[in-house]
Length: 170
Image (cartoon, rainbow, N blue to C red; front, side, top):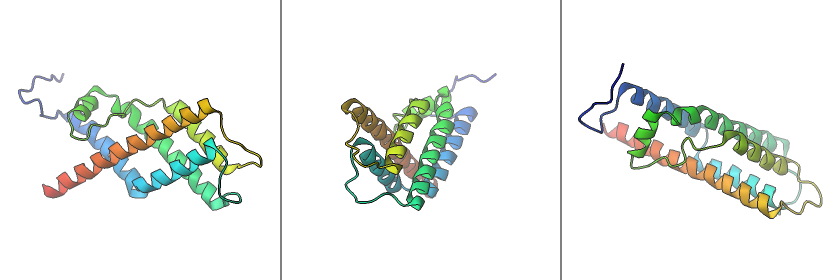
């Protein structure tokens, strides 16, 4: 049985190191495929399509739709994999003691956010004639959700960048 009777509060226990390492691998793998600006672009496009008519003319091209679907699935997959890990007590203790506190880590209602992302994706794909925009309540809800997602990615990006720099220095 492992106890937490360390005299130095900054000492990382083996299970804490394992949780952080696994989280870092997931975030690192994601950011090798997509940059924060890519995340911002896809969320912005989907948000604007969801909350109001698309000011651009014409429908999206099939390849753009396929990419958007791929991005949404990646985001949902990342949330699904990181949430249980981030809710472990060992990871929470670690995350709270860092310069880049991962504020939103583990606080996602993944099912609800997935639903909102897919609503956004549907609006993005099927820009129907005469679409005047979402209701005010839905617009507020989806805007908040997208901001939460982007803030989470921003926190993760800052943390991952700091982590990589620390490794390169050592």
